[in-house]
Length: 446
Ligand code: GLC
Image 1 (tube, rainbow, N blue to C red):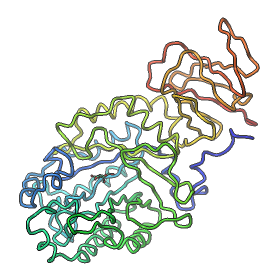
Image 2: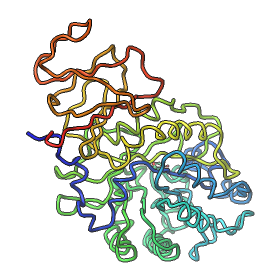
Image 3: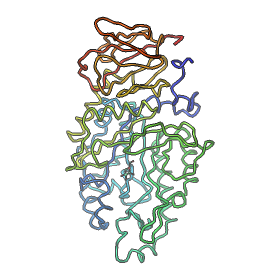
Image 4: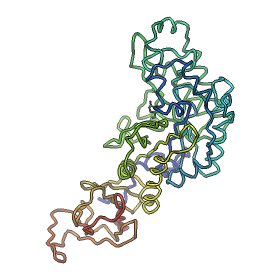
């Protein structure tokens, strides 16, 4: 069996890139940006729902929205420096506030003290920096007067909730949502990803149904998106029924690293895990569950090892900049990817089985062993006997020696290898890098 030369599984999707989407698997790492009025509340982007706030109370954020330090070129520079290849920004989150000069609403950035079209500047800056441009668009809208009350709506427990709903017609909202998506995909040039969020058709509350494809008119919406932007990658939260002949463009597990690559109907799919640096997507001043450096790196490694991308979120402050905690986290990625880039970009899942405490990524005949849990002196690798041409650490290109199965003794240690294993010889001390990567160059006839 010539395992070493099988393509990583994820490369089987869209092999010849007929749809122009191969950049996505090549990229592996992107930045999610959650920015909106909630940055001013600074206590989670769901605050309007969680605190059951009225639109009048929420108005204070609209009246004071003025991110004077907003500089999308700086966002782009930081994303690039951290090794991210694309950016997805919330054009509208559940609060309903629009970051562009939409002609379908007054509830938009150009009517705040800030006045500028924040989205237009973002698109320009990302493109100038060579980053791919993504739009997140919330299907949910807690501001629109025809968005009917449901389990997440801030007014769900209002004493007149059912009365309020009587005057609402979801079909009017559906048209609004379609018009806005058309506007977003018409006025800003080529857009690489549209990330819809989210559906909950089977979650009724207090006599109110949930919402899903009927409410969004998802099939028609998707058809329109494809017509406007044939190469765009469409997120999978529209509640469209999927099967092997109708695979989604992008599966989006959230705040969760799967243990096996997601599939639809047994078929491999393009996928992207989205995660937060701390426990909130929007800027949260007082939240303290910031992930440490090794969690940050290992989330990327775990994801790429399963053939997925990582979309890591930053929530800019109400001034429009990234705070020091976010900057420090981005620095972790920057430092690590500076030396370990080869093991991530364009790499994917390997057919080889990684030993305990390790992950494999693979690109062609280069197999990358990510040692997440540093052992004492040896790592045994299965099915690789006779297949390795050379091995080295990525961070310093220092040689790593190994023992083939026939070797029973080496230097002073008695090594006994049972079965088809090789044993890598490691320094006792872990190199000073998170999850050191060993590059195994496989023989051509592997
Ligand atoms: C969830 C959250 C939402 C966030 C999204 C990102 O749906 O409710 O706030 O934007 O995840 O995946």
